Length: 473
Length: 75
Image (cartoon, rainbow over all chains, first blue to last red; front, side, top):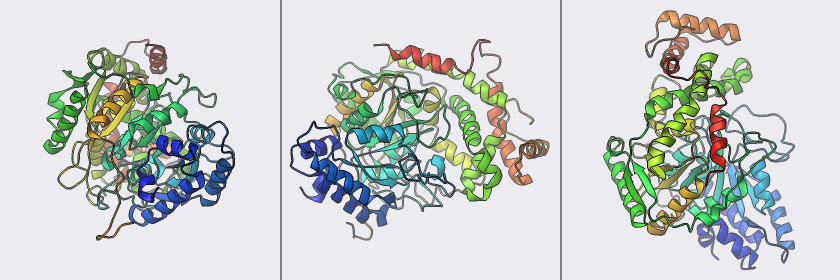
């Protein structure tokens, strides 16, 4: 198998090849490290590579050949640098960080390790996961593999760029207000924001606990299902993670004929027409796969977004309260400005926003999500912007820019619903875009069924080789 | 901190109150930042205030977790 062939393989097919002896774990890990080292000058997606630990883990797996095979035995993976890993200090994409190495792994990291995965790198992220674009003034900005002048989306910038470029078959990120879905769409891959509480956040960097979720990014929907089957389920270390996991891989072959996708044509016609056309083409592919379009009235997203912002701003500022008093100068201007906004939210306003949450979610479940099995919404209302045009710092343009970028993702976070971001075709500049399918609580199987059926029609995205001035790797 | 009824316009008095309120919590903001914070949060305060009449008295901040729990075992 060549390096390019390895980069194009899903986690499931890599695990199968390793279990059959067609490839050793050591070979897979060495190839992943080499590709990450070659790509990083173009992408700036990798914060650190743990070659020694990864190769030792791979060697141990190769030495245990013949035993019961584990679902990810020997598969090299890299994740957003926000998860506790024993003996390591995660950067959180920030100039301020925990000063002590983690004494235990984050639950999600532990679950992947137990499945045999080999972690080999920590990946780029927005500072404290508090940014939608992939800008980072501490680590340098992450670059989109499709075009390095354009944003990767954030906050899970490194995972999206790395998956799109074939550095890792899937990667874990987080989504508080769109941080999995936005980079998935900007980099042309798949991202799942699970139902709030389905996946444990224990040992993950918090941003706003009422909204935070951990989820996978991948090129192949099958890898999203595989990852979720290992990640989901109750965790005594996170009281909010109390739901049992379902058989997500089985959902990939669920028939989608007759499944209803709700669209609000007035809403879709109000976004950039070119992006609207890409989403239209994607909808046609879903219908070709057997799904049915039904007209629904989307909820009032701008009002829901304001409630979600109250929760996000207040909770994030509570997490950062001590550092904001002692080290305000160690935050970038944009993150500090957002944290200052949160300090001025009153306790009563915050509680009102939380009190309203169940009713807002119930209204959507009794409305559009009663008439449809999934609600189709854009993620980004325009073509993927450049790094320069979204470099607004912490000034007055910041709120407007963030508000317009997040207007379709943050409301879904407030509602607590699962959402699968899928890529559309590319625009005239060769950049991808995408859309999200929003489901009912714990409705991930239906979303995965639709996503898999969609990819059977349009195909799984191939890794993108980043290149500069005709070069490449 | 002064709150507005759905208005995104903050006055200089609001900025002063924001500065004072944050100073009581141990945060120091220059007046131009206080004005920007007042503008950003006035709109959100309006959204929260707009809920007050429509929210059932029994709605509490745990209602959302209860709603999700009810959906866990649905087929």
